[in-house]
Length: 185
Image (cartoon, rainbow, N blue to C red; front, side, top):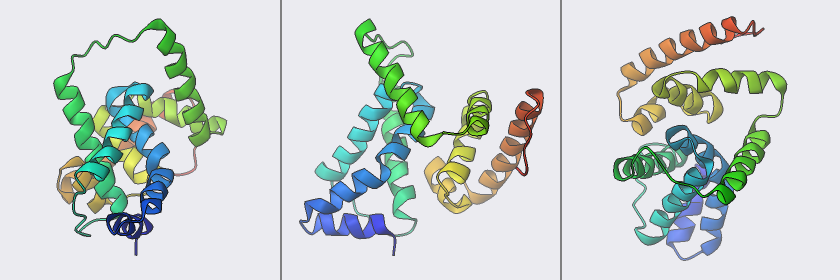
């Protein structure tokens, strides 16, 4: 059984440690995933908090049709979509907070991306279209299956398979431009 699902069930039964385990296990990955949408780590952190807040206040039912992680990421994705819908493209952030946001993003990325080759890969990913970046991130960084990615991205499995193929091809082209040496994509 998925650890997140059992932790969530324990939380629903009154054990607050279950929620603490969920936050500890999924917070960093969810922040980086949501940052793909908003391109601002401070906003991604707020959206992650909103995602966990929804678990606390609304206590949505986890049906078990997908993994707990994909269900949680779908809730986070919905929070990001809501945020984008309700906010303009220009977000005013005070200068004082910009340094904090930049340092937070760098420290969070460094925790996830440590080796030089991974940083080059991450840089190439940023140049891809949002759908390509998202599908590659979910499959290769978050270890979701194509079926789980289809649930998160609200597409069917065939669309995900095709999107993943095109995304890998595009990523390979980006890496080739830089003269990147890779084993397998």
